[in-house]
Image (cartoon, rainbow, N blue to C red; front, top):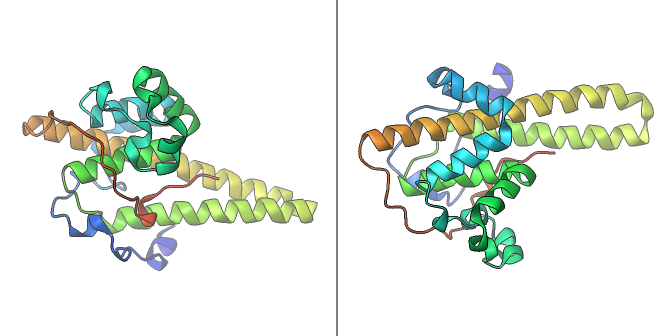
Length: 209
């Protein structure tokens, strides 16, 4: 894994809005399990609950401010048509269960935009490694359909990609939890009034096969 990290670029993508921000997360994704181990473990075991809590915390527990993926994935907004406000708690539950990767990424980007947090090179590497593993998993599954003898190899790759994704997702939840706890301590939480409507930088999306 260390060799892969050395080979993957941690540079900003072109026109990355987060590259212009001055603030930094209180913990990187790599250090998140050590920063708050109980939160990381709970996020591993209780995925949807952790994702729900992550978004609720990011919007100061004001569900009136909730929109599907907070506007970062415009396809979702077109589908829902702004009807989330009829039952935001239920809609967030559905989002946390059915759109895990989009939900986690949206909450993290929301916090980054809200507090103008610069994306960390190590974080970008881990996200890109995850995306690469998901692509490899898909390719191996396709190859196994053509040659059944590759089925065991594909299963191993699938398992590794799944474990990495779940671990990284828990790290993102923990990173946001630590950040929001810090901001509350600094008196910077509260007063969130609207969801961002900007485009999502490609490098910040986390995919799952």
